[in-house]
Length: 460
Image (cartoon, rainbow, N blue to C red; front, side, top):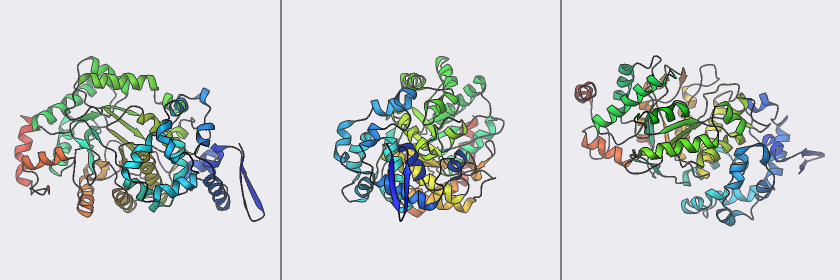
């Protein structure tokens, strides 16, 4: 179907929904690299005006990647919940934006329609929204998951404690974990990105996490972010796996470049569930995504990178994950050039993920060759906290010495908790109080004297 909008004497034509979505996207380097971005600001505005008039039903009739060519498209169409879609089925994309910003879009009503919203609908409406719109709507979306604690409750923000080490040294990793726990981080999970893909090393790291969590009786979950096939093999060997991790993308071809498909992810979830290691819930999957991943694999089908990213959330949604996070600035300036583009992308990702019913966190980050700095990350972190972000990263000093990128620190989490009065997962907060690491108001106590005690319990 051809879409059109005239500005003055100039009539702009867009050959299909895929092109319309791409031309309506706010500027970013990845879309320019792919050759799908609007050529002028006027063309971008014309695309947005045309997009605003598209009925939401059109997204069910016109696939941006053909149904027969892509299993993610088949997943989106086959799993669409018509009953959940019914309350918004008469709306256009512009009308959907108005409804989302209205008082009628409460936490309860948003939850009821979430399974009726396709990723392309979410991406489309986000392109019509200012940053403040993305923040306001996301703040109304309530998504709760659980494993050994409860993630995503209102008034709370969790932190993934990320104790990476360039040599997977267990003492170095343990020191970083101790640092993070003493500063109140780790309720989302303690998640290690391993430097090695050797199953023996991964197994050792899994046993390290299990030992620390067990010895300290921390109500949290561990995860080693290795490939899902490695995790499956270790589950078969009896390794103590809490969460099953995998990077995912929004097209079948991009997921194939990661070495996964939907059938493999289903098998991984079943294996994780079979271990029955959760105590308060059974959300066993952890997914990471990022704008530009499909383009970097030449697997984007001429889609803009933000629409591809939203489609990754349909993959995640199918497996009821505990955690999903967009590693928003990690891939580099070829995809998100500067702080402004990273901030916009982070807000878009969070909005789309929450709207689709996911426990969306964001790795607020950038690489050192991007035109961004820690002030930009402070801005994005603060905006995401206002938007109700589910979790962020806690990296020692905000500088990941293994992955070589800049993220957020344990101290950044303390800043944002103080600013917005945010608590941690309730089970984790209660544990901090019982352990003497926090007072009765869940504020961290002076913990210097606790360091020897905790260190001795870890190395005993």
